[in-house]
Every structure is written in structure tokens, then in C-alpha cells.
Image 1 (tube, one colour):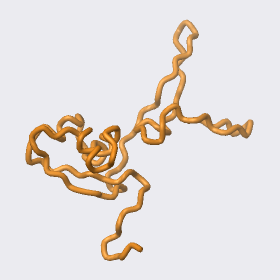
Image 2 (tube, rainbow, N blue to C red; image 1 turned 120 degrees about the horizontal axis):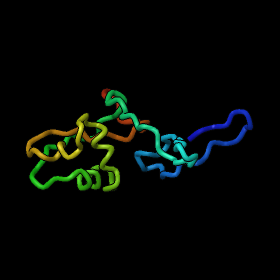
Image 3 (cartoon, rainbow, N blue to C red; image 1 turned 135 degrees about the vertical axis):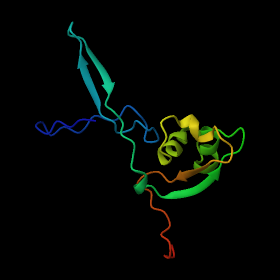
Length: 121
């Protein structure tokens, strides 16, 4: 998403929904040698796991898949990428490949969680 500060225009809306891992990733244009402009998404940087609030720790069982775990813990299979972001690995399939592995399920960024020792009203 880019903002033209000179014209006072609002930023262009994201082509991805709020629940997408690509929401808010800026769209850029590449100009080919023949002058065509090809839109692409800029690189999506992984969030720091320090800023995520753990929701649960899951012990992997045979047959587990990230989409099924996301549906179970987060209410939507489409949110599998949030579990991948909370567990730094190169390939998300690694997370469920080995039964017995413990993986973290975290709340989405900017969602406050319970603070240890503080009673939530």
C-alpha cells in the first residue's frame, strides 16, 4: 500500500483481506525492458516471535496438518500461516512432520492476551 502525500490521497486498499498474510504488503511495479509494468508484492518479512502472545502449545500427532490445527485453535483453516509465523522454520511442513514435536500457536499480532499475574475483567 502506498500513499501519495503530495496529493493528500488516501492509500490504495489492499488487494488482500485482513485475514491474509499478504494484507498490508505493499504492491510495487516492475517495468520490463519493453515498457510493460508488472505489479508484484514486496517481500513479506516474518514477524518477530517476541511480539506474539502464545495461545497454546500443541504436541504434534501423526496426521496433524497446519490447516487442521489452525481451524481447531484459531477457528479458520486459512490461518495456518499464523502458526507457521510463530514457529521459525524455513518450510512450514516441517512443523507437523515429526510426531512429538511441540509447536506454539500464537494469537495474531496486536491481539492482546492474558498478562501473567493480572486478572482480566
